[in-house]
Length: 164
Image 1: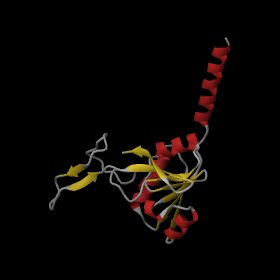
Image 2 (image 1 turned 135 degrees about the vertical axis):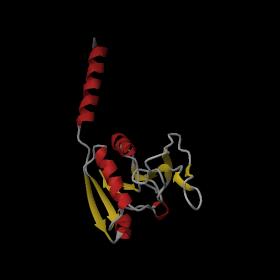
Image 3 (image 1 turned 90 degrees about the vertical axis):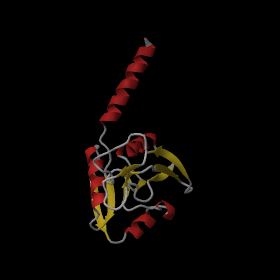
């Protein structure tokens, strides 16, 4: 009987936690960045409320949030005290918020093709392969490339959080 009660209580707590609204993500982008706008839309479509601030001084934002220079991308976000650098998947941000690791944040350095806001409509690959567009007049063009989402620890060191 006690085990059933504990299981029921655990299920109820999980349901309540799932019903909690996600925190607002503050997204900082350079003025007029379409890929950044697409990333913000990806976050909205996955349940986040997004506040977008366009700025001509992204360097100041990145320094204030302690984003390591070698991990920089274009957009920078802030959610629940964590920085989100680059085109990070909404699901990974949700995992970060659920796990609450002692970390500075998540980073997808650079601008990998295939990341949210940087994807093409087709073809896609679910195994993180590189896909070439063969219809290009000049040469095949990469449509999707392998990349990693990194967890940035308090000491600035990183570990792989996800692979795409």
